[in-house]
Length: 166
Image (cartoon, rainbow, N blue to C red):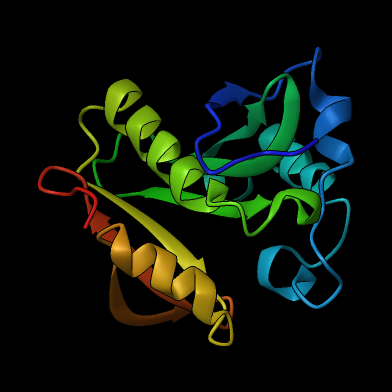
C-alpha cells in the first residue's frame, strides 16, 4: 500500500472485529526495544487492557488508512484522576514509516484524549533515551521532559489544557 503524507488516517479502538489486524503490526528489530519488551506489540497491549496493571484502564487503538491498519497506541488512565493519563506502545508499522504518519497519528490520539477525557489536564508518556526521532516528535507536539525516569525511560508530559501543535 502506497501511503502519502496527505493520507487520511482514522483512529479506532481495537475490538473483536479488528484485533487480528493489530497483531500483524510491528517495527524493525532495532526499534522493538523502543516500543515493547516483546512482539507482537498489540498482544502485550491487549493483555494489559484485560489485566489492567497498576489499576489503570487500558484502551488500545489502531490507526488505519484506506482500510489498512498502519499503527497502534494505547491509552492508560485512572478515571478519577485529571493527571494520571499515559500513552504507551505508540508506533507506526515498519511498512508505513517515513511517510509523515507518526505526526498525524499522534495528533489524532491527542484529539481523542481531549474529546473523550475533557477533564484530563495532562498526558504523559515514556520514551527510550536512545529514541531521538520519537523525542523530536513529542517535543514538536508540545510534550516536555519532566526529568523523571520510569521503566528506564524518560518521562514526557503534555499539558492538555494549553497544548497544541508547534
